Image (cartoon, rainbow, N blue to C red; front, side, top):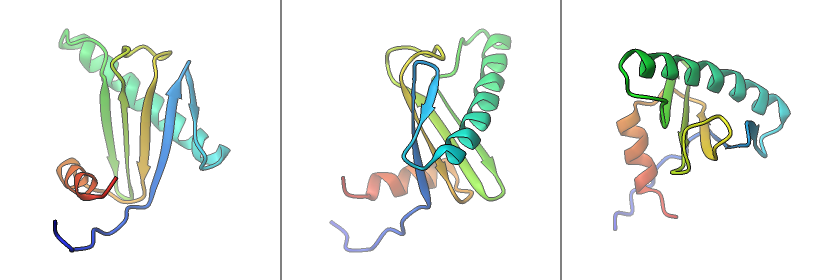
Length: 106
């Protein structure tokens, strides 16, 4: 195992369940995440509909200073189904994010 330190990400975690977003990060963070999540999910639904792929089970939005992710668990992709999300306070490519996350110890 490598002893190279992996820099921590400015990370906020969210849960999606029964149509609600929840987090320990506070109500303002929840409101901001929920607005971005709804927009991203709506966009994914429209693309999935046009391509006949169905609803998205995950999505990523990258802005200049943040990366927003969501994923549904295997129960389904309806707004009522359980899932999780994250808001990362920097723009980070998905491959780099996956590399950094997979190198962190559980």
